Image (cartoon, rainbow, N blue to C red; front, side, top):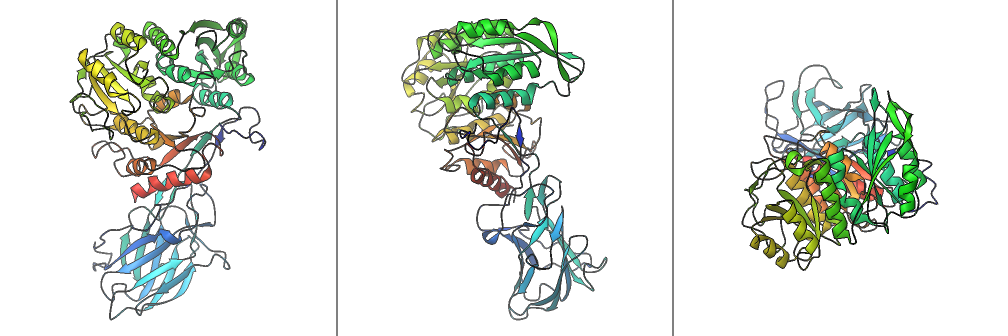
Length: 577
């Protein structure tokens, strides 16, 4: 959510969608062609490479299909003297084109070690051309192209640059030697999105509507929602398995009233059934009664229409503590769709103590090839970050979430694990969250334990993402992205912006990455995992590449500032370069 209402950005319940472009790395000069010695059109060896000088790059985030956007300097660096022959050089980007206004946006091209250039121009098609009038002789030189601007184009991805040298005129159609850089000159990330409202309630309603709107439906469609208290974020996050069983999304409201954003979502999105989670202190009986008296709507060929009846209310589903409420929610989920029927067999035989754990928290020697319905997730009952980043896998894989005190296995957790017949437990968080005695108790009772844990919540989010995307047999969940190239980014200092992320993450199998507090940055760990996610294989493997190049941002500019988005996109693009 965005916590400042004075900016007046949100009127009603409009979803914000920003089209952003990623630069190519955070620091340093990144080689776009590590070793370019392929023969050119004339069959000659190419004795230079092209690189993007990112230390003097312009803004690294700009709009899709934007014009006159500053981009990084480009450098042609010789490996031998005379490597760049005399004649015209032509640079053609793979998307969009270079731009010049004849004044402030005129490119500057300079050579070193005897290389002389002239006749710099931008062609009508957006290529950059210049004439090399003298080559280096005594030592290898370089040519640097600065003050570059581009029209980005609308194609998603990262631009490569094709360089042709030795031409008789500006970008002549034949002759010369040609090389193509690997992608990295700049990038365009289309449909990078912000989903947010003025409050956590508004933001969660936006998240619900992004998945369960009437728009685009055909025939008659009736949606279901799970309603939790905004004052009990752990209970709301614990509703992910129930929402997954119902193929529903989450809405939150104040304990004593139905928020207008909730009413609007129920009406606009064709909701006929609401499951209420939390005890009477979380959601008051008056709210339950008011829901049951609310006229229901359904989706009919893309729009909402009344059903002639009222909303069906199930619940409240809760207990005296957050642990008991989570257990009651899992029991309801198991009734709706038995875990043994909908949870896949989860093989974690190749997950060892340090596979997704860089803490000293204890685990079993390895996981097991658990039967369907026999795996659960265990989280400390005061830890919202790990529950939040794992909400997508709870939703998609139908994993019950069990809450416990950190120091010892709680009685509610003990009973739930036994009642569900759990044989394998995925512990979230390190030894300061779920402490060693808890794991020892689980192992002593015959369960195997794997731990997904990092040095902080952002690091654990990265471990969870690696686990979700791991493709090897027995190594993880082997998620196949339904929207290739996408992931979610939310702030880690508060759960308010990602309470409804379970359906978005679970329906699309998109991992959730976290920033630190809005004024702090990404933290020490998120850039590293984003760099890996943006690489050619992503967090999968070479046989199942799934690189990330797009981020859907949950929360407004005060929750996830533009600087953090820019840094995240730079980290992704740095992994790809």
